[in-house]
Length: 105
Image (tube, rainbow, N blue to C red):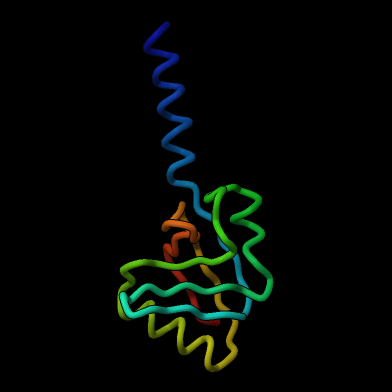
């Protein structure tokens, strides 16, 4: 019985840890700093991430503390050209939703 309970608990925790959310919209704000962090806000917010509660304490931003240079370039290009993006987030990166992947439309 203890093994079944433990297996159920581990399965529920691990499924929560890998939950992803897909949101889309235009980048309304782009943040960066001298440490290389980058974060964005979408004009529509992140309703799917909120619905799935992938990062309960996020501040309305999605970003990365140590992003791949390609992700940074795509975010800057999407912001400067006012293109919509589709963004997949997974968990937290500090106070931000953690960017997992993105598509520039």
